[in-house]
Image (cartoon, rainbow, N blue to C red):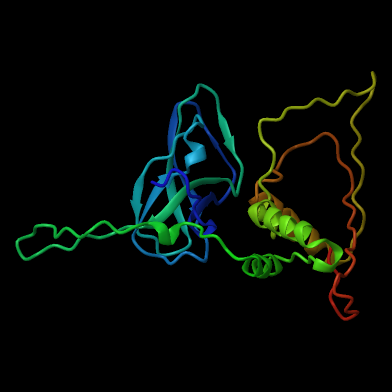
Length: 245
């Protein structure tokens, strides 16, 4: 297990959905594998920064056939623990399968370095290309040479903090807040606005995405307000592009 180098993003496992682990409870949870990772017999090990967490991750051997596998995790506290979707919790690396000879004995091979699964230092041009694939638009003419390099390095280092899809949003946990109402205030249940069928389908689609990502959940709220759809401005400037909400 490397102690200094940082694993490449393709070797990081993230929770496939939000989950609540009961106190003193052990469970296997689904985790997603990066599509840049070549599926093969692999070892799952806890992420270094996760070792101080109150929910250790077990080292296990897996042979995934899809980009979803499982991690075994335990809550060692006496309170429920919530883990948001897309939380990085473990690493996955190819397992070296030792062949056996005719007598059934394992033929030992020299240890293979794991440098190929570590993130190597990329050039400025390579970082810019990867940032562009993620949708970043940075013009070097707007900055000095030093400022531009620092900006690219900063964006590249924290590129995983920028969500590409709703399911990439990590959410907020362990945060409690209270809304103070004026004395005598009673709940209001307002009627929903009337939408045409294609907008109702868009609302249902987005609500389903938010629910699967763990952002919202079903409930019986006393307060109900209508949903307001806001049309997003097209960044491409193409008048024939379908509107987004």
